[in-house]
Length: 134
Image 1 (tube, rainbow, N blue to C red):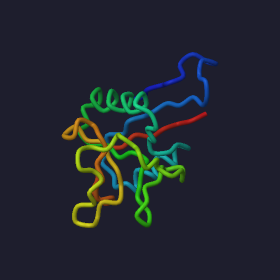
Image 2 (cartoon, rainbow, N blue to C red):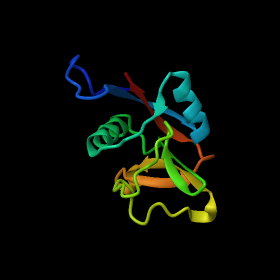
Image 3 (cartoon, helix red, strand yellow):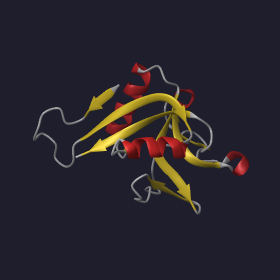
C-alpha cells in the first residue's frame, strides 16, 4: 500500500517522498533493515501533513500499530537518518515518551493513542512504514 506526496513532477518545493505500509510484524531493527533493503528509511514524519498521510495509510491497511523511524540512543531520540528529533515535537501521545519498564527505546504510531507517537519495546513485532525520498 503506497502513498505518494509528489505525484506531479516538479510540484515539490523540497524533496519528494512516498510511503509504503508493510503489514508483516517485525521488530524495529528488522523493520529498519527491511526498509534499508528497499533503499528507504523507516517513515520519519516531520510535519503534521506527513503524519496525516501515515494515519491514512494505517487506516486504509487496517493496521493498529506501526513502527516509524524514531529511536532513542543514549537518552536522546533520533530519526532513522541520524537527524536529532526536535525537543518540542508535539506528535507524542499523552504522557509519552515514558520508557515504561526501561525497555522502550523505539517509537510507533498506534490507533489506541489516536495514532500519536508511543515509545515501545524495540523487540516487539508490529507493522511498519518505509519512506522513500528522491
